[in-house]
Length: 314
Ligand code: FES
Ligand SMILES: [Fe+2]
Image (cartoon, rainbow, N blue to C red):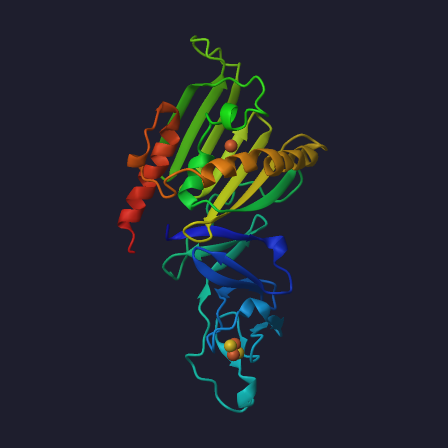
């Protein structure tokens, strides 16, 4: 999906050394300029293609490990050691760069047409930051982006896919609502015992999942726990996922968030991963599914996805 801000790296992973990552099908190098601002550029050196992420940052510029050419944050080559300092540098010797911003402990990259004024970071005031009561982890999955988002919108898999941890959780998703407001899919559901009666307003496991299309998920469980899940395509087959829990309990909130993140990493996510990785086809459209009422949020996501893909230049 073009014209979107994607989180691409945790801020704390970007220090003095350049970092090489693949996101959105591109090999990128991330580094910090003299003011500490993040910079994202194509990882292939424009001279003869060496991997710039193996270079170093010198004097606020990125130095290629192969012949020592230096590139400024704006992409211009500012030094070609083998030519001597006096010789002018050809103007087309530039590395392509991408707009990046840093917020909420994440580096965000603008994937789309360059504009003089870029839109603000999505949901910047709504997403949990890195303060007290939060814990963050990242995953690299061999699962295409759309499949990851499909999994994020799924509530009724829980008592089956995670049956070992869902002791006593009901299998009936009722009530369940999914609606679209602009680019936001709102879903709310209660998993409870299938007693055939109207919901009493209390029983069962209630969850609220909001997705800012295409890639940001904000989930709420009970009154105190909030989860952010953000997915960024690495390439057509792989996805980078960052998830963050925030718990509002005084003093122990951070510990609860840590515990929730660890249980996701060690217990829950491996189960989701195995199922999503092996689901067929790997790149489904809505026609490949036989969706039921409890999949209404997923249906909305795929509707937006297919519409956007059609509108986008290939
Ligand atoms: S390949 Fe980078 S300086 Fe030669
Ligand atoms: Fe799951």
